[in-house]
Length: 241
Image (cartoon, rainbow, N blue to C red; front, side, top):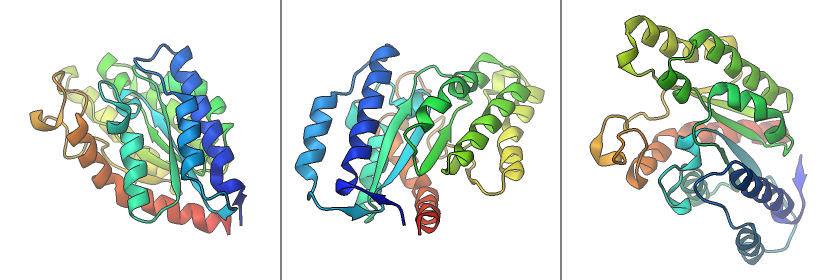
């Protein structure tokens, strides 16, 4: 069984520091206060050694980063809270970069995997669709990230997306199909068909831009995807034994 020393503090501190650096260097709209994060973790720790504190890497774009939201309202924070309320000892690392494409994700995945997450929640492709990028290239980028994550020992959860309908029927069909195709190509991954399920196109659950979910919308996403993440945690537990 994999043992994480000091109640998982080392993993949490390192992951939190990496996110803080990434958001500062990448000129994101807000910065995580690493010092406050460290104090909060230490204050909440029992100080005893504990097994199986699982680290989930939320690897995505603005939907993961929490564009337009407070940190507490963001998807990674809400997901971590929901998991802990369900009795899971899990840390969700926010590795979302607003505006990121699948190519951008591919260029930084090695760096993100250096933290050895137990689970990678891969949420990318929406910006590829908004820009009308070639779905074949997006698919290749996602496949590369899946392979690298699996080679790093992580359980992979692939979150699907849907293309904007204003780009034409042919483009939308090709784009939408690449996610289930990837799930078929990588039978060991977990597939959540549409990250924005139950939220997309609902004005009550989205910000004024009609694209990014508001706090209530994020809560819906979290509740919908939660069973899939819990299954990923079960697989990670089995791998660690």
